[in-house]
Length: 253
Image 1 (cartoon, rainbow, N blue to C red):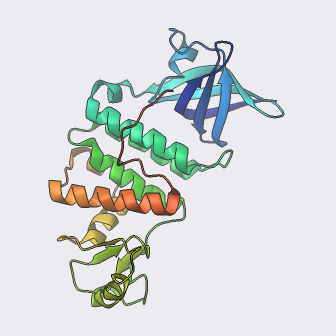
Image 2: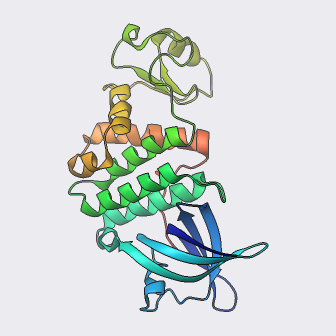
Image 3: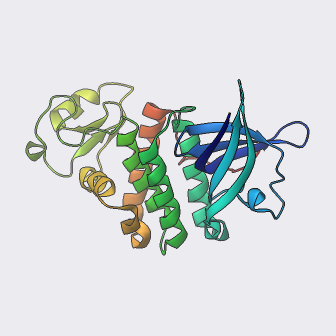
């Protein structure tokens, strides 16, 4: 059966007989793994569509057990991401994150649209691309069903207005936590409790509520950025098994 889908390349690797296995995030079908004989280093339109940071239309053949890419054409190339090392590293982490959190053949059109929005924004970013990446990940958490509780104490339900600021965040419990519950949680060796000097809830709300284009010209203060990175890193590791903020990333095997 032949199908057509819009998508972006998450990863590729060489396999036998001069073929490559391409992992795609498609709007219509979710994450797909498809083999192809198209030479990625060629100059054809199909070859360009197999490169990272490219939004393309793919014509695929769906067999009984596998997909194959017959042809592809570029819709838009975000090549400027690869021209800057900071953009490249954030972009590579973005691709790896998607591959880890997506299930095979489960369509997530809202997350796909957000992903295209991220590629558009990071290609234009005038400041640190890390802030864009953090905002993208936070926005994706609700779509993936693991958004932390930021409206009340995650343990006892105490209203946010009753919790003194700056509020604390518990990775192990999954959200904002009041001082009394934090005191009890500190007794656990498994506790992952953060007590930032700023209000982490305001930061998470801002990430979630504003369009990604907002963050093209925004840099977090260094101490704030470090804490936000650590919280997101620990949170995604715990709830999605997808920490991409603590190690270097590659696009191709």
